[in-house]
Amino acid sequence: MAFLFYTMEKGQCFKIGYVAKTHGLKGEVTLIVAEPVDFDSIESVFIELRDSLVPHFISSFSDRGDKVFVKFDDIDTPEKAASLKGGSIYLPKDARPKLKRGEFYDDEVLGFSVVDESLGELGEVTEVSSSGPNRLLTVDVKGKEVLIPINSPFVLSTNKTKKTIKVALPEGFLDI
Image (cartoon, rainbow, N blue to C red; front, side, top):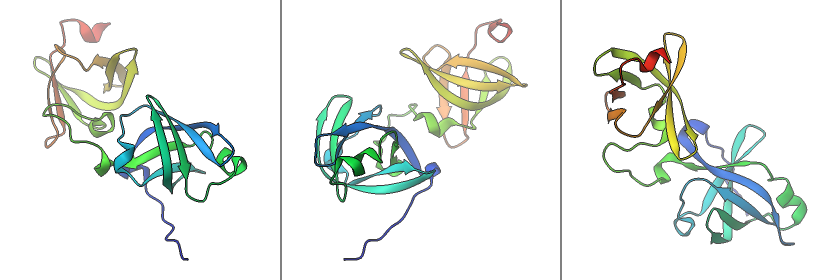
């Protein structure tokens, strides 16, 4: 039987979690999943191994909240499963659910221009991070890193076509 071996570029994918450890004696692994994923609807995932995303086909799984126990095809011993430990798990971007208008995935807004309704263009988004329950835009404002909460009243709108995020920052926010 011939197998088609292919890899995918990270820019075409999004990270959903990582392989935490082996599970059982038949090559199963425990995944820690940070993004909601419907494992019933996917056949495979990409695991980052040696800086490449390698496809792994799912034989079976059981879902327990943020942990998923997975058996992959061709991984049938604890030793083979251990070789996946620590590998980040990715899915193609086109596999993620569509969001409501105005919502976005963190990786979608990297490079977007941030425009304040009073101050004009501030800079571009370099990162989206989480601090507790809050998501933050990291914006390069003239060489200075500024963190802007994504929740309202700060972010007014996101225009994916124009690649802009409109914000309303309180007076003196950039001086902090």
